Length: 261
Image (cartoon, rainbow, N blue to C red):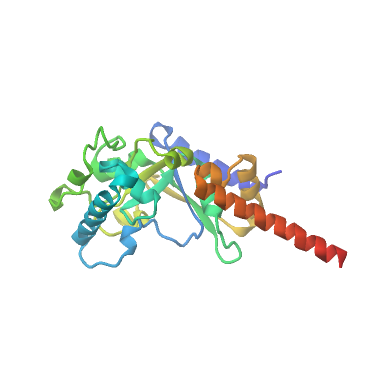
């Protein structure tokens, strides 16, 4: 049986969803509740906010030209590939699945040292506040060209984060039900944008998972059948699950030695 506190946590998620536009909710899991909602690029210390755009454009151009035979992609598709393979961009990963976000929150979670967290986001409300648009920006439709989107006309660049709905043409994006926010040029984590008012506006919510909920969280993940290879449907994901199996087998062998001794 799940604990009363876990049921209350799930009800919190449901309550937030019922207040979103079109019942649309995005999730992000982090294994330390103290981590801000900051994209990889903004973890690089720079003095001028326009330098981040120049740095991102340099990374995009380098990846495009140097890996043409490997990825055969450009525009937004290339940016999404860069993000999934660890290049620092202004993108922040989210999922349309609570369970996927919970998996990443629990992955490598040091539960004896800190809480983990699942963030909840109303992406359409975010775009209403950021861009005055009650819609998701869909590359190829509402957003046509990546380089135009980060042009150097500062008056046309979003200061705050916007929600992007990618084309699901990558196995990892499909498996993880992946979506993205793109950080604005104000060099500020999402939870601090709009003077921190996104919480009061029901745009953003932080669900902390304390160590006394660890058993519930892992039971919930097992019930939903998630594994690394299901979220990373490639050889890297299979390798992670294989190593996990080896650790479990090793523990059983060691335990059997102890019993015999």
